[in-house]
Length: 284
Image (cartoon, rainbow, N blue to C red; front, side, top):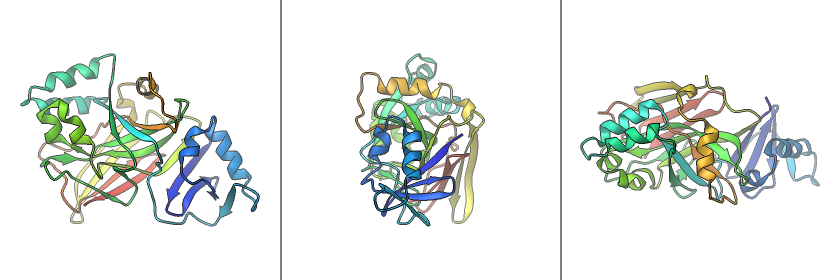
């Protein structure tokens, strides 16, 4: 399987392929999302990296401070796609009378798709994620993120953390945008993995939260537990929608810390997806 990593830093856009590092002349990652065949075109670009006449040059290593692999793309997310997520949403929203909504959406033909944010609200590997000042119950949500091209096709994957205020969402389902969209509420990275085949359903997603140097929570799930196929989720995202520079879709979480757990300042959150990467962020 051909696999390439697209990395965005303060020094530019880099490609990693077959133990080579290539620096492109892209001003942003947007051109990757508008390619008709990203695997072929990026490989061709990497192979042409030989001199000043090329639009890319081979370098010794990736340089600069890491940034999320994000340009003008919108980030959307699918909710209640794992059974664990359904049961936890039912619990947190029972007092507000919203548990029936989550029970129904898990089995419904139409998935829950919601707007998650953009470059303004999203950080990359090593950056600070945040807890809303008016929330007392916030958790990370480790997820597989898929890159959707301008043509509406999945061509790559990222590790994602959909930070969520469970108390706000649980109070009323209509408060979901406030629970999900705020500064530092989303992290993606460390790279956009462009590959010719999707991750295996046996792929493991793991979450570790460290507090004061000790493990405060850990959990794992398997991509096979994702109830809906990725292509089905994407089909609802792109239906009657245009994404001129592509989009990301986060596919939901199957790992939820226990009810009494909430993120605290200086917690270190690590999300790992086999074959895709490791994303680590500290809570501000």
